[in-house]
Image (cartoon, rainbow, N blue to C red; front, top):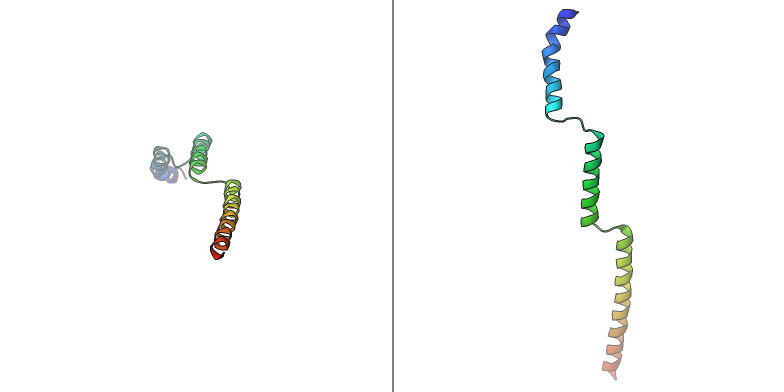
Length: 79
């Protein structure tokens, strides 16, 4: 049994060294920092659903006003 452990011990040590060298496991602090970076990037580049709905409502109101203006111009042009 001890010979098998000694036989595979270098592989285990190399595996642990690679894991620590390349940071294959993430600490909660690093994960939280990355999460905040992602949230900041998203908030700078994308609009929220509420902002989108507000803008959509404003565009609909502007479209209705433009339609009214076009109708008034057409009525005056017919006279």
